[in-house]
Length: 319
Length: 321
Image (cartoon, rainbow over all chains, first blue to last red; front, side, top):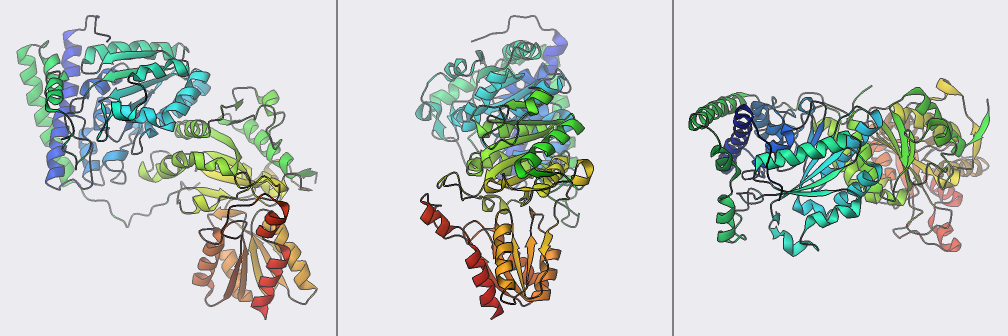
């Protein structure tokens, strides 16, 4: 596994910690809101994987493009999507990122370079590949990132798009968040190869494995892949080894996972790991601020109106 | 006005739009050498490999890439060699491209064109002869274009490329060699969503699209010799459907025949009749479509399966009786 070697300043460490904590506390709140039916439908929670999206998004520039999955609240916050608007979307409110039309699995915020969270496994790979093609054709110097899980590596989207990107040397970061389970199934039961990275050379790109619970290591690997993409040297497949603390979705308590495995991964929680490198006072200050901001965001999102069906809508953009 | 073939009309539309808008690019399997239906010859020589380029045989990948690129402001035109292969790209078309404008709360639309060769008559068998418009009719955010003449092949394709939304253009493979007068430049643009009345008549309305328009017009000639005057409507666009033109004609004649090169259920024929009944009131109607079977290979079977002049004339006679 790649590990962080560069020296990162205190201010950056504080910032990364704050971003990860914001995701963690928002997801905890979202979980409660789902369980008490304040948020309807289903949700896919990101606790445990925060270091992946925070580490990758930290090295991106404005104008880069990120596509995320239905487990995408973390990527959204890591890109700076306003948490009030994110919560409002999950609550189906008019002020949500998508005006309440998308919900948890379809958050889109183009101003924050989030081309979307995609409800179909592998859909993020499609959108990011296209953004990478646009970047190459328009020569705007940007890169695109696809976040996806281990489950998506068995989808046609993965195989076809990685070949397409490999043959065209598109400026892409394919970031597999390997949390070891595709929905309720162990990756090892449904994947013909135990090492996902072995697929990278088949598509003409380097594969890099990284400790997905170490935000600094993720950041370093992502920075190198982004630099490579911006140089015109093509895509990289990054496998970030991580773990989701919760089940797949609302109805899933995750009981198919051995307790020892869960405990082992909880011991590698990326947030306390980074906290150990921070000043104790800073940790407390950040905790207090993130909690306060989340409360305010929740109040604002809850008080927003529901969207009205009276608003004229078309599936088409009119000329 | 110059007379050119349907396939030349397609090529001219692509060339003119590539020239007009630097965001337009063309990709697909073998489009650089001109494609199996010879609709893109000369384009790569004129516009270069950044604007016109070959792809792997990987329809999902390049249509996905077109979706993402369109959100980012490009205007891709992809060629899916045979309409039958559209099954490979349905997810990116219907779960991504067609929903994006609405789901994103109108943050961005997806100006994407998919061109594809469809239709039977070439003895290509079950998986290279379909007209799979029905696969897409149930998806609200896709425009569906179905030209029948060289002029429309050019004019509708130009409109499709200029449209801000995802558009699938169905090009009937038996029409590529047909010749007709096609205007030059801006005069050639044909707006989406407007049907064309190809023949005036007062006794029965016959609605068709693509190659079925020729069948409908031939049936109308046969009927005229018997004193039955058919009005023939060419849909040209399947979504948005020109309900006003259909309903006005159906109301006038009171009789409606819809010809479709596809199975009897889940196609545009049923939709056209439904809208006509809702808008025009009580009318008598018939569908002429294909049997609920895969399209067979043998000439005797395929010719039997495809709608014929005799079937269309027979349906019209039955209504007029």
